Image (cartoon, rainbow, N blue to C red):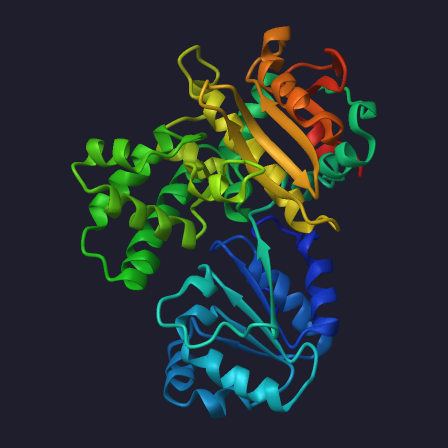
Length: 420
C-alpha cells in the first residue's frame, strides 16, 4: 500500500494535475506522471494510489530495481492496479507492460512516474503508442503555493481585453517569489538554507541522473554550461555562441542542452510562425524550469535582484514563462506556447495559440509601462487581424491600464490571482 510522503511544508498542497491524472486513469491503460525530481510526483501519485488501493513499487529501492530489470514480465504481473515510481530506471518494463495491457484492456492498470523525459530515453523498446497518456508535473505554481486560482491564460482567451486586475504586491515580493521558486523543499526554506538546497539539487542531477543517462565524462563542463545558460536565461539559444564561450562544439552544446531539458532543468520555447517548416528550424528561447535554481546559479538573492545591476529582468521573464507553461499544461483547451521574433528584431516574449486564436505577452521588470513597450504586440495584432485576441504587458505596477485596441498593461500577479 502506498504511503503518502510527509511534506516539508507541513501539509500536502492540492495540485492542479491531480484532476488530469484521475481523468486519464478512468479511460487509459497506462498513465505516466513525468516531471522534475522533487516536484511532488511521488506525493501526488501516492495520494491517488492510496485512494484506489494500488500496489506501490519504487525503483529507487535497489532490490526492487534489480527485480524489475531481471524479470520484467513477472514484475508487471504482480498486481493491478500498479504504481511504478521512477520507471526510467528500468526501461525494460515498457515492453512487458505493453504485452500485458494488450491482453488485459483495463483502464488505470499502470500509473508510472518518471524524473526524466521517459519517451526520450535511449534504447526504449516501445513508447506504448495509443496505450499511454503522459501528464507533466512542474514544480509548484504560485497559485498552488498560495491557494490562488491560477487562471489568467484561460481568462485572456475567454475575455480578452476585458480582464481586469489590481495588485498590492511590491517589487520586493516579486523578487522573493523568483528566488523561492516552486520546489516544496525550497519553498519551506529561506536564505542560505534555500540556496544550499538549489545547489545540491543541481549537483545531484548532474552527478546522478545526467551522468548515468548519457554516460558523459565531463560533469564539470555540464556545470559550466549551466552557469552560462543561466546568464542567458530568457534569450534566444545560440549553440554556436555558447560553444565559443565553452571551447566546445555546437553539436556538444545541443546534446548537453537536450540532456538538461530531459531532466527538466531547462525548457526550450520554440519560435512561432504560421509556417510549420519555419517554426521547426528557427532558434528557440531557453528558460529555466525553476526560477529559484536559475537565481542560485547566478548567485542572486532577494537583495541583489533589487539592485540596479541585478538580473531581475531575465529571471522575471523566465518566471512568467514557466507560470504560463504550467497553466497551459492543465487547461481544458490545448495551448501552444512559443516566442516571436522577426528578421527586423521585432520581438514578443510569449505567444499563446489555441487553434488560430493568439494571446501575446510581454514581460517588463518595471512598474512603469510606456507606449513603446507594445511595439511587438501591435505588430502582431496588425499581422493577425481578428485572430489576435489581446496583447498584454505584464509589469510590476499595481493597475491594469489600456494602451489601445486589445492592448493592456497588467500586474504580473494577475497570473495566479485572476480566475478562469
